[in-house]
Structures are given as C-alpha cells and as structure tokens.
Image 1: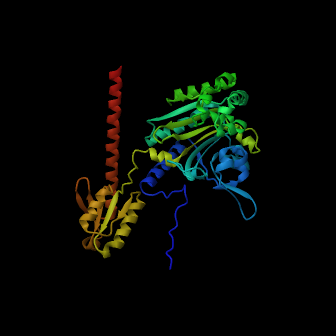
Image 2: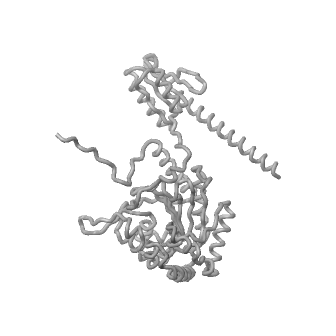
Image 3: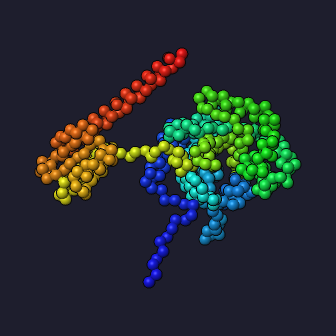
Length: 443
C-alpha cells in the first residue's frame, strides 16, 4: 500500500507559531490600544467582495487587478475576489451601509489579505495588514492625525529608529493632471530607452515609472519634472499645513518628491515609512489621501485619507518577541491534587492573573520550569494542603514560602503586582530625572 503523501502548505502562505506569533500578536495589540487612544472605531470587513469593488477602485490596468487578484466565480455565477487591500472594501461599506450620516468617520481594521505575487522576505500571498482610515474629513489636520498615529505606533513597538517618514504631495486634481501630462511628454521622448514594463506603464499608469527599480529606467525617471512646478496655490497651502502640523507634533519627516501613489483617485498627501532593514522592499507603512475613491464607486465626492502596514513586516523589525510570562505556576503533588489545582487556577484567572498548572515531572524540574516561565509565585498543593484546605504559596524572587488559603494567595498576588508597578514607576522616574539633568547640562 502506497504511503499517503503529507499535504504541504500552499506556496506563499505560512503557519504562524511560537516567536513569530508572539511578535504578530504584539503588533496587533499595540495597534488596538493606540486606535482607541486616537478614537478610531474598529470594523470587520468580508474577506471577499464583488470583483467590481476592486476593479473599479484600484483600476483595471493596475498590477493588482490585472496580475495579482485571486478572483473566482461562485456557484451563482457571480465574480468574487479575495480582498487584496482594505480601503476599497471599507469605502464600499461606507456607501452601502449609509455611513455618510456619521462622517467624518475614523475607522480601523486588521486581518488577512490576498495577492498572487512572488513571495519574498516578509511578503506572502496571504498576508496581514493593519489599516486606518479617516473618511469625510478634507482638512490637512486629518492627514496629520493619521501620520501621528502611524509614528506613535512605530515608537510604541520600539522600531522607530532607522525608519524614515518620506512625504510628498500629489497636488489637487488640476495639479496632478498637469504634472501627469508633463511626465507623459518626458517619458514619451525617451520611450525607446525605457524597460518593457515602463513602456507598458506609459500608456496606462505613467506615474509608476518614477519608482521603477529597473536600472535602465533610473536616469530617465530621475530627470523627470517634479510636481512642485505644477502645484496650484491651494495645493501648496494644503501641503504646508500638513508639514507644519507634523512639525508641531514633533513628527520627523523628509521630502521625497518622487514618491507617488499611482491610482488616479489619490490627491495631496502621499507618504511611506521606510527602512533599510528589510532588504530592497523597505516600506513598512504607507498611505495617502484618496479624495476620488468614494466617487469612483458611485458615491458623492467624499474626502478621505488612510494608511496600511504589514503585520508580518512590523513583527520582523521587533528586536525580540515580547515575553508572555505566567504570573502563577501551580504544582499539584499527586493525582489527588489535580482537581484542587484546576480550581485554584480558575480562581486565579478570574482574579485577572495568568496561571499555568505544571502537572508532570519531578518537583525540582517543575520548579525550574516555573522560573523559566517568569512566574512571580508558585502554588504547591499536596495531601497536607488538601486536608487543611490551604496551599503553599512561594514567592520566587525572595524564596519566602507561606501557608494560606486561596483568598489570601490571591490577595498576596495583588501585593506582588502593586510592588512591581511601583518599581517600574520608580525606574521610569529615575530615567526622566536623568533626561532632565542632561537637558540642564546642555543649557
């Protein structure tokens, strides 16, 4: 009988576990905490949409639509597509659910997306993103708030060092159209020297030639006209308001006049947070203002701005996976103590402390494992404790061991946590005092 072949994961997908999962979860939890601070409402979107949602919003000629979408016909004959990004689906939901009455809306989402592209470092065919959008706000302050959110996210994750915010303006519709015409004239004059991909883009998406990675395209792209010569006074004023707002919020940025968003509905602000720590594809978070998207889906003209960031790529930038320490390790002595250990663990978890029952192995090895797990305390339950309705409570930092009931053990855990919080606060205060002293020395 032939041996059954073990199924393999689909190319471009991954099973996230262990260190990678801890990094992944930390990124999501940090994002969730911050989006609440910034007043963003979470939203859950369908994983698939009618294909027209993406074809109309992203454009039939874009690489995403023409080459990368996972589209299929369902049993009813409808063409559906696994979502390649969040913005189009959120815009569709904004229209179909009548959310216009709530505008301006600050919305956030995270979850899996799907693109059929060549897998590479930190990029997969099923990947995951964080997404933040402000819909219905046309003022530059919305762009600044979103960029502050993004900048704080990177800082909270501890990965801001080495990441640069590159910023550009694409102008209003009038400015962008004039610049596009100038770019077409420039590239048309050098058409024979462009790469095949850029020759194709010239007719359907000329702005994308500016960030071509092909060596033969770079001299032509680098000598192309900047948008600044075509900006209207209104567009110049809007960009100035964005940059002045970032300066007021102490968000560092650098101008990149070659940064583009290739789709026609993009307006004004375009930005990328980039790093050199992830190889050639160094963008970790990117976005821009897309005032024309809602209109392209059949709605009225609605200003909007947003960004997205790859969860896997952010996780790769973390220096180390966050520790998930167990606060209490429970060591039952013998089979008769298992039920009591289960009851103790439940009481501890209801009191909002993490707990793990270490059932098997020699006592010394289980104690060593409790230390490795970072436990603050160990609860030991043996025959004597079962008889008296008590537990042995051992504080690992000091070695102190006490006999007490579960109510007292939980109270003791609160003391330990409170003491740890005070120590942390003291360390933060010492660091702040040192920083103030350094500032005084500099003056």
